[in-house]
Length: 189
Image (cartoon, rainbow, N blue to C red; front, side, top):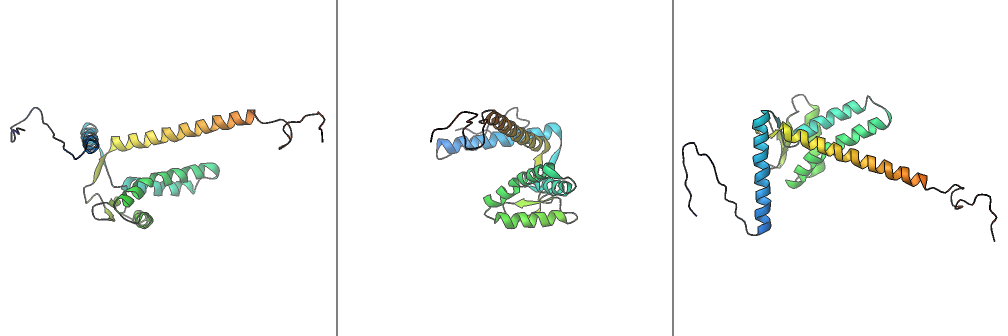
């Protein structure tokens, strides 16, 4: 291999990926492509968010507050959406070897306090802390796309569930439950 380095204003750059197995190389390549795509998105739009689950925790807290002002099924749906958002910090905590329940409790407590909206899960230190100061940032476009995609999938699942429920109702027998739709016919004993 030949490496030419320290060029002024290079027109192209090569990245060499090595690994013990083809699977490791493939996963490393996928992660690198994702990282380049994220940086590219941040540079195109010019907007970033604080990462490490801090945005999800803040939105979940605000959704729970909003859900208290709504009644019925809508309240349950809003609370379920808030809980789904917290999967991100919970997963980060688990990945870091932290107790996910303790991490969520600490995260919720920090977000309930004034100035705690940037608190997220620092996977390197194994604790929750202000991730804005740690300069942990994510492109807004990537976060928006993830939430939009997740919402669309949930909506499709609900629609499919409604279709299945509707089709099973149309196949129900006409008689009392357990009687197999006997109607007016006689029965042999």
